[in-house]
Length: 305
Image 1: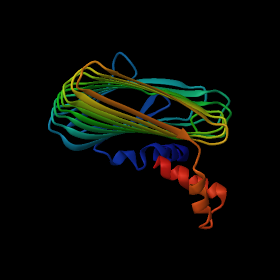
Image 2: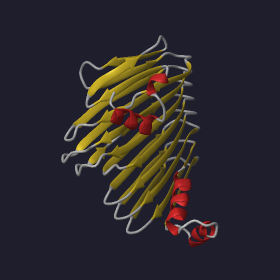
Image 3: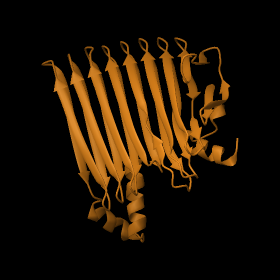
Image 4: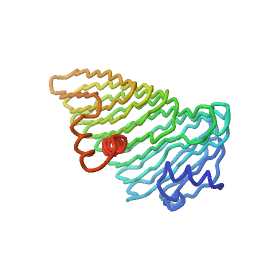
């Protein structure tokens, strides 16, 4: 791998992806490297671009890294990845895409990820996106995540758009059986004229199913963000949705909440707060010797941490 490849991987994985129990590294639409083991298998799809990941039941604390990097200006990459998580397995999956675009054509990655959690399965799914490069071609990322959770399964989904992504439409759709729990945390930073739109649709089908969705975002310069949530409670269940955003400069953020209770025992809550950085926070940090710009950066970094 080239130096720019390693830089991208570090941004979206945080460490050497080959240290995981199993991994699949994809570059410019092609498999770059892969590793499997007896409990975690990765198979290329025959009818489409992408992979199937199979985790055996009772697998404990397994790790899977599946990063995608794009360095070719003008490339549009579409990939379909399906995760089959066996009964009572406990797994950590680190995914995401980094685009370095030094050219004049748009580079785009659309990742469609489908999760199938069997009874009692536990998944921590970490997804990071970023854009680098000095070209005027856009960096475009459109992730779609579909989640199917069986009885008593548990999933944490932690998504971060780090920097440099010009346009993104992020869609997550989930369906939960009884006693299943889904926790989603989203962090997005936009600047310049960037656009980010996220849509969450969660269907609480089973009794005592629950979800907690938290979105934290910062929109600076002339960027625009839109947050849409649609939670449906069909039985005795619980949902809590939070949308917290900071706007700076001419940034704009729109929040569109929708909660639909179809049962008297459905407990659904939505909270949204959008505003500028509080003046007293700036003053406190500036009194410690920071400039206004440095104080703003500290507040934003802490907010998105």
